[in-house]
Length: 207
Image (tube, rainbow, N blue to C red):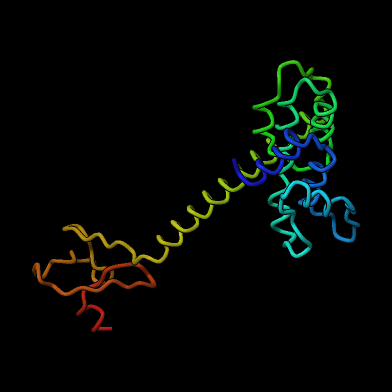
């Protein structure tokens, strides 16, 4: 069990302190720019009673956001595991249906008990559905972009290569019209890049 799981296990199963568990999770929730954070006057006393190290104001906002989904998902799981206590089950539902609380939807879906009815999870299921669609759309977009980049890279690689020159016994000199090797297999010839044709070297020298 990780540190967040241990902390919430103490708060919920040993101390039965829902408000403390909720405060613990809220302390990891980053508020929008310009918003006001939720003041929790009980954090200090909770820390003293549970010996759990709560985050301080020095924690980076980015790390708070990364952790919020994990701790709220764990809180929901711990609450649902205490199925006989109605207040815990209700808190889990409130968190799941709250649009502003981040969750690991796949993990939450895996431990929802069978006695909870669908109409109780309406908002949560909509959030989960849109989350999956968003992730799927992002995956398709990244796949499409990577495929396009591969195609462009391959095309650029082809354009950077020198043209393939095919010479056979029927190849003619563009200037005199004779076979390119009419004067022997060691006949010198040239390829004019701009006009893309073969000529005998002596035919070019005559010009």
